[in-house]
Image 1: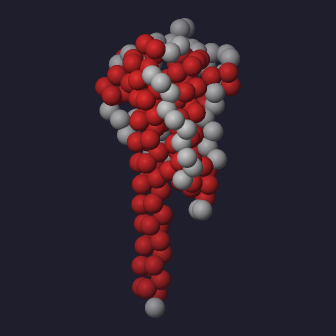
Image 2: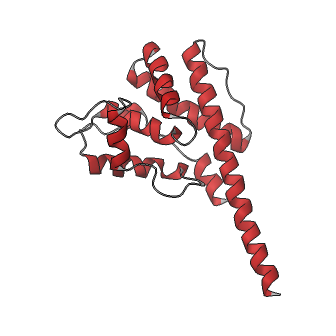
Image 3: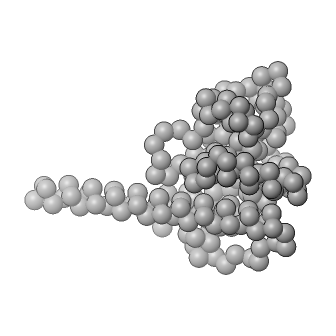
Length: 177
């Protein structure tokens, strides 16, 4: 297992009760999200989260507007979900998914389900661990399907990145001869 795979297999998404219990200013929110999502930044140039992105998510109503320029736990949790999935799903798909799931579950339960499914699916794809049966609701099935697609695409990025760096080294080695 290479370093990237190990980092992903050991990735742990902070649970609702572990999110900041104080409101954050924009720069604090960006820093917090980047720190927690960084292990997922595979095969992607640039930053996963910027203040411009957050402002756009607020304008699109994906994230509730800040109160007195501060972002609370609901905004933090939604940003982590969006930041994780934005390269694999369109904004409208993310909006639909969040609306469906939040129509069934409270914010804290929906967010923790998201975290658990993300981690289970990453381990399933990278370690071939068995996934437990999906919950009984359509919303739980949606979360499972989304996280399965996410984990498989992440796996593809790792394979491509690892293969590309191997090809680069082999190409350099053959040119040196």
